[in-house]
Length: 369
Image 1 (cartoon, rainbow, N blue to C red):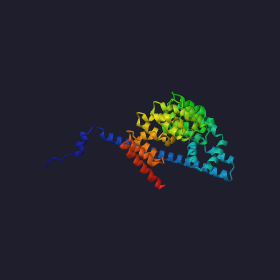
Image 2 (cartoon, rainbow, N blue to C red):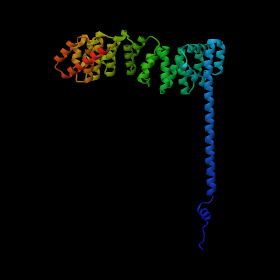
Image 3 (cartoon, rainbow, N blue to C red):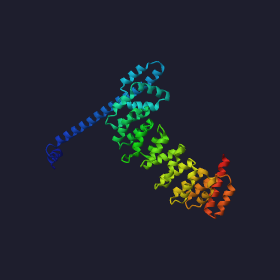
Image 4 (tube, one colour):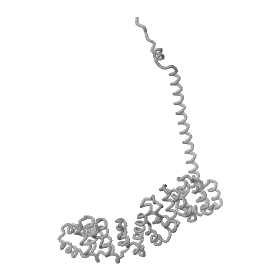
């Protein structure tokens, strides 16, 4: 009979002393970690639920206060309720911003009146020394909504302190625009040491929102060393029809920045500033096809009939887009046959093809109308 082996004894002999104790301790530690994680998740869940309940309650109370003030409740009672909710604290400010975006304009005005009677400017100013940048953004958003120009110096200070926070810069700059803070805005925009981190579109929205003498602002900002700012002002001058500033735009036709040249031509075309047409016509020979193409559109916007010769010449350009713009402008002139004959006389096949295409397109458009 063969001798049987006791595998348990063999395994015990091969494993180091205390191995099983070490496994048990490891398992206990692992279980303790799992239990701790579950406990932390429960704590986070209850804290989040509590904060959501607080937010919901504040929101409901704000809405109820506005409704009651409109109907029967006294404004003093409304103020007492909002004060109890710490409406100018972190959570209250966040809810205010949300509520304002959802309310009808009439209710917004009621809430504004209540907040102004609670000395909203003083209360919000006291919060602006916070180091929490997210909270500061929320405060600036509410300041923006309420339009509190008395806080313009505090807003400027935040812009200079948090230059790298794009969201904060946007809210602060937009607030200054809505305040109509001419001196601060022009100072910041003309300060070469103050780097603007905002996008072109954001800056355009901000300057368009300026609540003051816009022509005066645009005239001053055209002196900015920041091409973004200059381009935005040139664009706004055109889109808003600020004819009195046309002469201020003309020098940019000679800029080394072709974007400024293009924007200047578009604006002068929109303003139909005929006295500058000869300068724009010279740009039909520019080395950049984008400039030549815009020059065609600008001349057409000023007076296409007066510059038929220039437009027919542009119809022979080597760049398709320039020919397209010229053909489009010429097709809008009523005397189609004469225009077509003059284009045929050029002997340029590509010009003829483009002109035929644009004339047919114009006829189809008129037939549809």
